[in-house]
Length: 425
Image 1 (cartoon, rainbow, N blue to C red):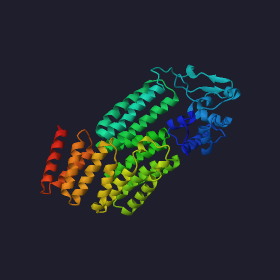
Image 2: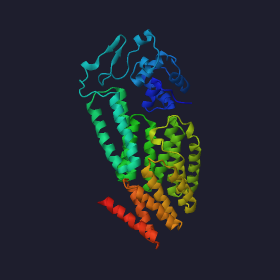
Image 3: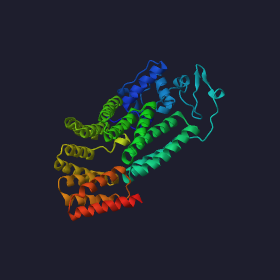
Image 4: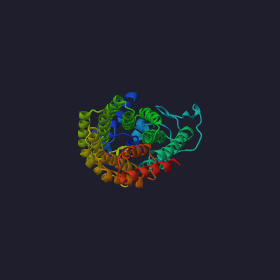
């Protein structure tokens, strides 16, 4: 069933990073903190988000909803009778300044007299939307140009958001949106470091992202950070840590009520960890899970942006890696061809990655002419891509190709050297 239909409550829930299942759990925690006897089920939440007008929450539920969002019940899309508006004081941060309102039985006592006066520019929803647009552009830069230039842009955006959080006036809702964006940028920096290095910075960004995700209580961003951590630890040979990251990602995804696409990403990381550690039976099990999850992604209605890349292309690529590790490169080639063919036009960096792996695998099977042809296509397409991982793949192909006497191999080696020299200047 679709999660919400664009109602104010559904929009605010999604902006806060909750699936319906995760929101029900957050509601229970907030009720416990407030000492209010109130709960909500996923079924009831769906009615609140889909019916017009939605059923009116009882007073206990009203108190918890207003505490969670810092908004009166009427602003959440409910038709509230006058007597309920009169008794329900606003719980949360004042719309004018960042301060708590102290609520009594007769009304609010303004906290300005006892809290420092807040100064600085005001930030609102339009400012958040502008920053979010710049954040979304990081995906495009990464896909087209690689992690190195994307990391530079991410750092500039991170500095701007940090200054805004430290020196501006905003509501709790805006503050949470900015904090969430900072956590997402830390996740981005971890991924960019995986692509462009250095590994130490990537790992530090990963840990920063996990801490931030815990502080803002966003389990799906913890899952994202753990997925990147598994890739980093595979590269460093810490396979036990990669497996632990995958296990924790599965646990958090289940708790958050994540759909099959998020689980598909985790299963691909599980397959990678098992493949590189030589656990081929474990890799087969993970790939089987991936195929099962991939077959159900068309039913996914609430996919986080960072998981939207996952699909049959990534399953094909992971399957090829499994066959390569099993010393059956000829079986890997059809899957690599399918992966390269399946990537869209916006994925310049990944296309170069995958085609370079195809070229290397063809070389491993003795198909020298075809391997060098594929490498020529990589070199022709990757001129604007700045990726340390791609450079390593080019270097690996060069080292392997020098063993062959064919003129195509000599030409490919020379072109790789010319390309790397040009980038070094």
